[in-house]
Image 1 (tube, rainbow, N blue to C red):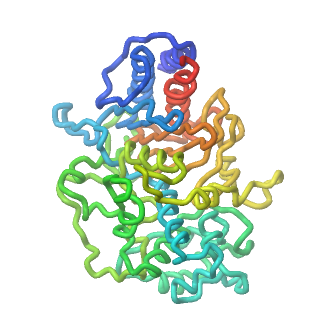
Image 2: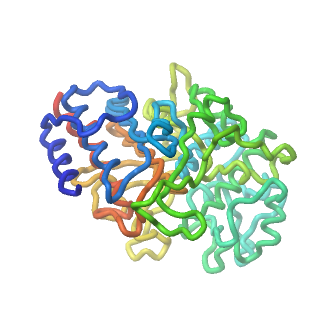
Image 3: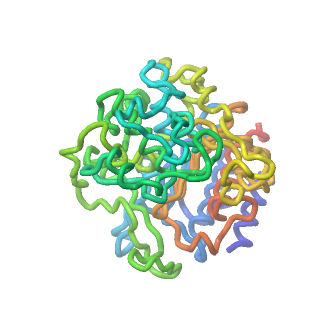
Length: 447
């Protein structure tokens, strides 16, 4: 299978026509030539259907020069006992996009900064209504800037999500030293921490008086006419039915991978409307309930709409959602790994530079966080991985190109199928490289 995929990649590089190995499930929106589209469909199908490393589902979108050049879906959003019981991924299928949610949350936050409701450099304790200081460095304030750039000194060791019966104030009081880095003060040292976004979401609730999921609808999703959100209990029946179940070929209890076994649902296995369970939630007490860090359900097409808005200077259908200055600030470099790696934990080179809620990727592969093999693709954006979901939202402002990748389930242990040129898994590398060559790079050279 590896030889077959290598051959398909070669065909894409040469622009050679290829007859599809399998018919993808979904509809492609594309300005590509028919032979190019068939070759790309076939190459992505081969990755999804690799018997050694299968994927439950895949939804992708590519943007070239600000316009959607390719959009396609593969596999199933719900896997039944038989193929007849399974439901295919559609262009409208919502995926729980994991940490790509962080970047979407940051976009909502930047709107509040524009409106003067928040300052990036204010002590967040002022907004929260209680002191939030690293007890080892009590004189150093934690700010939104440090939270957004993962330099706050907060750590996930004490947890980063709690039920509506808990408040963040109580969590931090009880958690003590587990919540903080005792060696580095806020503002300088990078360590990726989900807890940062629980604080960010709670701050956003406190200054607006709005529940986080509803606030994000108002600030980002509704103005773009994008479906989905952070709270499936509030979804329409159609949205619930078209939310992808996330899978692994791994048991839930013992977490043992079984590549030749059945797909096991890990998250969003919605046979009926998700229960609310948050009726007694106190706004501004603990927004981790809505997972600002990873809980957004959205389609690849919806993320494509967000990407086009960003590439168009913050405009959508003639209306200004974000000012260009806010976009420049958000995607400006806030932290960069020192040559001796003394100012951060890069996690095997994956994290080398960061903006406000977004990762800054190297142009060339082979440096740990390169995105595309054998090509120069300078990009910003975010990656995600949780419950079998693998996601990517990456864009190149200079050339107005970008890619969205949503994988709804992985069948093999990522530790046993690592990337060859980055800290990503090999399946993600193959998808990004194939999509870039087929929908952006080679498509561009053929015109």
